[in-house]
Image: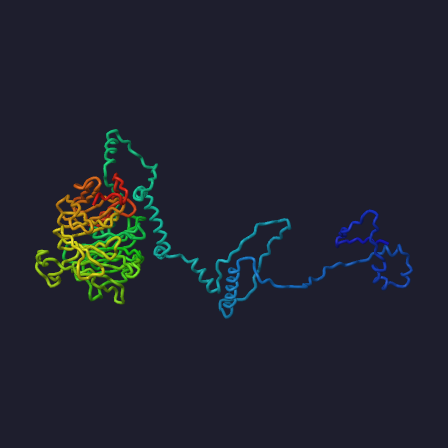
Length: 586
C-alpha cells in the first residue's frame, strides 16, 4: 500500500517537497507499511477502532510536525595560520590588548550599551567587490581621543605653521621649481642641454645687417654671462675664495671678507646651489675674514676654512647655524699667528702598500710654516711639515724692517699645490718669488727651487692633463709655464702691467687657462696664441676682480669681485682639443 502525504503550511498552501528520486519506467514504487507509519497512533486508539475498515483509516487526517535538529560539531580544530599579512594581524592584536589594558581604572571610561543600526536586508542575488580595510591607528584610551578631537577642532596658529619644518621644506621645493623655470635657458646652457623654446616670448625680427654682424661675432671666441650669485647680505663684501664640492658639483662655497684694512673684520661663508641661483642654501658667519676654502673629498660635508687672523676651522655644511664649526685651531699652542693664505685637503698614501688611505688638511701661512692638521680633544692640532727658510735675509727680500713676529730666516708662504699623482710631492709659492718643491717626508730641505719670479708667487696649479706641467702667477706681472725638472720656464706670459692674483687651468681643455689681475679677466688659449690672451674681459668701473674658478663638467668660468658677486661666464667658440694629445710641445 502506498501512502501519499501532503504537507501544508500555516496558510494552507501546499508546500509538499518534490521527490528527489524518480523511478524508472516499470520499477515498483517505494512502499510504506501502515504499521510503521501509524504504529504510535494505533497504540492510543480504542479496541473498536482496530476493527475499522482500511479505507476509513486512510482518510483519517494525521498531523506531523517537522523541525530542524541542533547543529552538532563533531570536530573543531582552530586554525593556526592566516592567509593575510601576519605582521599586520599581530600588530592589531597587540593594539587591542593595550586598549583592553588601558580601559581598567580609567576615569574617562564608562561602560554602557549602544544602539547598532541594522543594515537593510539583501537578496542572495546581490554581489559586490571585495572591500579592503586597513587599520591606520588605534587610540588607546578615551583621553587620547579627547585630545585628538581638541587638536583637530582648534584653530592653528599661522605663525606656527610657517615656522614648521614641513612648511619650510614645501616652500624650498616650490621656490626651486619657480627659479628653475625662470633660469631654464641659462641652466640648460650651463649643463650643455637643449634649450626649450619659449612660445610666449615675442621675438623682434632682425635686419640683414644685424644678422650678418651676429653671425660674424658668433664665430669668434667670446664669454656669455649666464647668471650672478649675489644677495643683500653680502652686498659690498669682497669675494676672497671659492671652492666646489667634490661630490655634489652643484654646490659652491664662497668666502667673503675685507682684508685691505688693518682692522680685521668678520667674514661670511655662503653655500650656493645651482638649484637656486637667487639665494644661498647656507650662510655662516666667521669672526675673521675668510681667506681660503676647500671641501673634503672623503667627507664632502666638511669644509676647511682659513682666516686672516691665522685661525683654521672645519665647518659642517649640513648644519644651518653657526654650530656648524665643530673644530678650530683657537686652542692649539702651535696655531698660525699670521694670515692663512691657503688650506687644502691633500691625499695620503700608506707607507707600506702605497695605496690611498685618506686625506689630511694642509695650511700655508704668512708665518712661513706649512702645517698638517688633525682632529683632537681640543679641536685641531698640527705639526709642521716644513718652515720656509729664505735664501736671503728677510729684510732684503721683502723690503721691510725686521719684526719680532717673523724671523729674518723665514719667508711667508702664499700658496701650495700637491702633485696630481705623487701625493708625497708638493710645490710652495713664497713671498720672495721662489717656488720650492718639497716632500712630505723631508721637513728640513727643499727638493728643488724655481727662481724665475722676482715678486711674491700668488698661485700655483698643476695641469689636469699633464702631471709634469704647472702654471704660476706672480705680482711681477708675469705668468710662467713650467715643466717638472726644468728650472727655466717653458713659456712666459705678460699682458697687462699689473700683479696677477690667480691663475687656473681649464678642466676640459688642455691648452686653455684663465687669470685675473684685479682689473680684468684673461682667457688664454695656447693653441691659438702664446703672445696674447684670446679673450680680455674688463671689470665694471669701480669694481675689482678678486677670485677665479673654473666649473667642473662644463665650459664655464666663475669670477668673484669686490662687490660680493660671483658671475658665471660660458666659454663659446673655443677650439676643441683632444685631452692629453695637446699641451703644445713642452
